[in-house]
Image 1 (tube, rainbow, N blue to C red):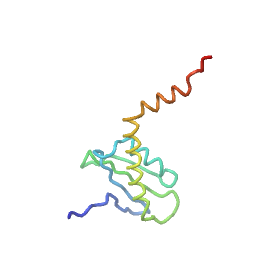
Image 2 (cartoon, rainbow, N blue to C red):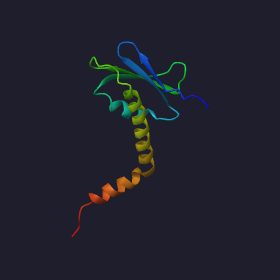
Image 3 (cartoon, rainbow, N blue to C red):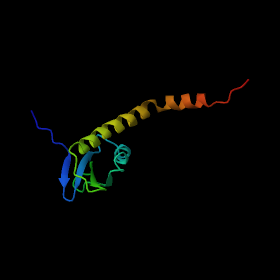
Length: 109
C-alpha cells in the first residue's frame, strides 16, 4: 500500500505551507478556505513555479503562538467543505434562486 503524503511543510519563524492541487480544488474554493483562517494568520498564495497545477498557501501566525498540529488538517478539511459547497451551488443554485425569487415576489390581492 502506498504512503499518502500530507501536503503540509513546516517553515521557519512559526510558518507553514500547504500545497493545494488545482485539479481537486478551484481557485475560488482555495480563497474561501483561506478566508476562514485569516483571523489567525497572514496568508499568501502563489502558483508553484515547477507545477502550475499546485497552489502554495503560506500561513504565518499573527501572534507568537506555537503551531498547533491540527490547524493544517483543519485547513485541508475546510478545502473539502468549500469545494462541496461550490459543487452543490453549481448543481442546485438555480433552485435556491427560484425559491428566493418566489419568497420575495409581491403579493397580489
